[in-house]
Length: 381
Figure 1 (tube, rainbow, N blue to C red):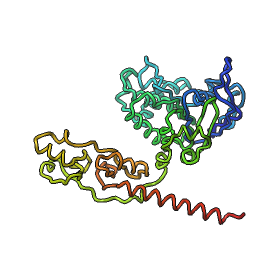
Figure 2: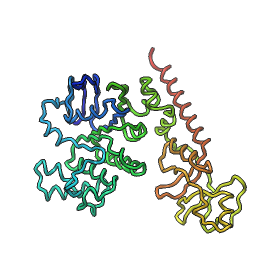
Figure 3: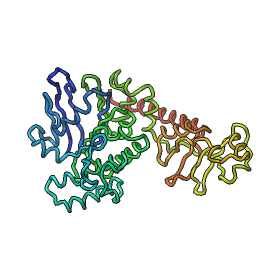
Figure 4: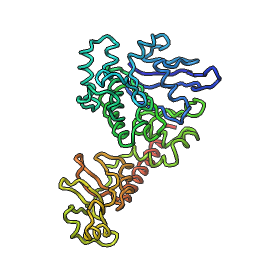
């Protein structure tokens, strides 16, 4: 078991600053718990107390039922994976030797540790061709993958992650988040992840712990409850006024209908006739969307301008198994106000309209209200 429990934990520094105040929190084994909140709210301090990089002033922290204050800190840390911002790699070691660090420290032969490191690199999506490179020769995203691989190399039951993706660009950050979700589905680690980004917390966590000023835990619950029922005014403000939009990410969109979508091949654009306000989606030979074109774009192509210069941005795409948030975003981000649904290969399946998404939301809420009423009246009073 790798559950983690804080009981009455506080951390006060010699200058009188209280970083964490009376924290009592249980993190279930195999869960992905995200500590989220503004800077200086105690979330990182709380996480670093788990591996005794910081010691609490009062209170008890147990891992698997064992009081960690009675465990040798070095032994404790060797059994807990740790990933930090900007990876924290050893610059004088190659990628493979960075990944093999903990197994070697635990007594494994360098040869065996390197072989195991290659397998972990495969697991986190790192090309084996990078094994002999040094950290400075890698992109930011590659460095973070190495950091995750190093943390997983000795197969620890617990993984601590301190704002690991905050230093990379948004595209790479999304890729790394998706990779973490895939890895957790496969490995079922007990993960404690620190971030100040509520969207990242909602996407990754199966539980969210929201910290506020003075190191007070404001709410600990599943993401949907935090969004729908903020426990305090601070949580409501931190989650933001658009929390209703974020809550859509927990609602299935499988019942949203797909409509026929007007498309055109690149070599047909110059010959099509469009009415004012009409749009066509340009698709390639594999039926993958390239962008939208309207009357203005068609006229520009006929005048000799390149197709690439005439197409409007395509907006986000609605993926297989997507949620209502993704469906609505696909419609409102499209210049044509038409969402594009795609299959696993990226080929176009059909069109999504915002009105259908909102109607589906209304039906779901109506069904939920009916279920609550039925449960209320059927419960023994």
